[in-house]
Image 1 (cartoon, rainbow, N blue to C red):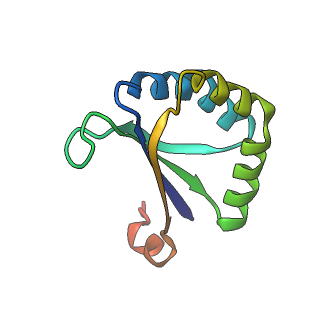
Image 2 (cartoon, rainbow, N blue to C red; image 1 turned 60 degrees about the vertical axis):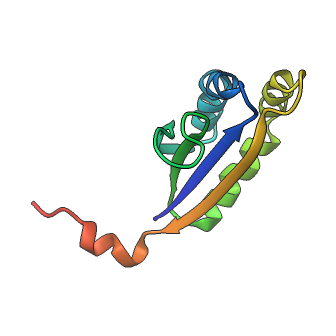
Length: 113
């Protein structure tokens, strides 16, 4: 299993727009493309406190991640939704992503009955 952590720092005053975009367009499109969100939230302590949206997605492997992100990014509904939010300027200051491979630790974390 691999996990992708995505951290979005919006332009000043635009965190609400990011959350709205995620709620109205991204979550439905993730569902359409079979993408699974493990967690989501806003940073409350640390760098970019109260101005960062972070979420984690789970994939079986890198090939699945690439295939599903490719379909999502090619979806015309995504391009339209993002463009409508960026009419007055860019939405994000920065986007950071990391891929975490849990394979070496899966047995340690397995819960037995």
